[in-house]
Length: 157
Image (cartoon, rainbow, N blue to C red; front, side, top):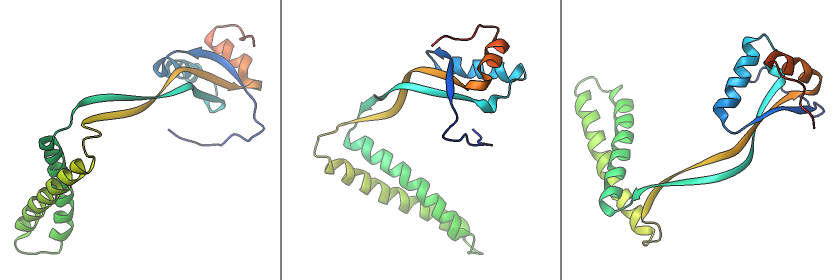
């Protein structure tokens, strides 16, 4: 996503089209771009936003320990690589010990973190924000040109 120019607060946009999915909105903007329309005058706005939480499974002490150990191992690898730069002999052992120690500490903190919830949240989930529809907005002075490029008539308010 790029932002070559920022519209001013006085820039007035009008709805060119409303679609149910972001993929459809992208296709419309892509069609405008392919037709030579200056797409820097276009906005895609998600409307009626809602928070969606997808439950991915039950969180147990075993999973908390495993996830913590994996996270700790990655952090240990990063630290090991950073310290390994300064070691001439035995850099591989520095990296391996960092991964092991990171995994152990991650396991401990994963267990402590899960225990701290007190059973109030025994599941894992992923959250996201979804829009129920997407409006393709065009600066008012470019609305007729955009509608013509798409082969549609100017939308009515």
